[in-house]
Length: 193
Image (cartoon, rainbow, N blue to C red; front, side, top):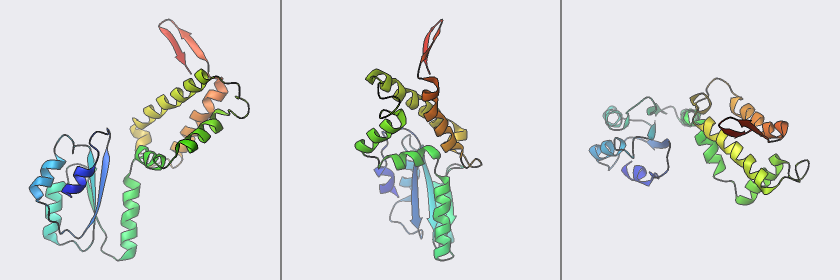
């Protein structure tokens, strides 16, 4: 556990998840893991333990050493393969939307990214005359909205609205085309919309 905590990139902001599949046995010193998870770098690490045939003494050590908040959890999987599959589904459901997006986005190559930008900016059809400046504004528009969504508790931990994220993204992607990506002049300056 201690090695896994050290492997997490502390320089990256945001919540990180550590998922452990264990029977409870470990060579780590519990006091060291306890200190790591309560350090400034460990504060943003959520811990999920999938346990298989966990002895009561090990469960006590895990709970006292690693469980700190509502985000940490011990998920028992003692009923064979079906229980293990159910535990992994529980883990998948616990990941936040923005973390899921980051996980899927990590596999997008630069060429795939350019292809997606061309598709959604419609550079091969109705917006082929967009200047680089206008394209940059469009990307910044989406980036700002993605940052707002990532900070939104309702979006990030969506448990009730199954299509909330995809509907929101579809509206965001359609908005620049509907509004022709213009600016509004205000007393204090202008706003790109």
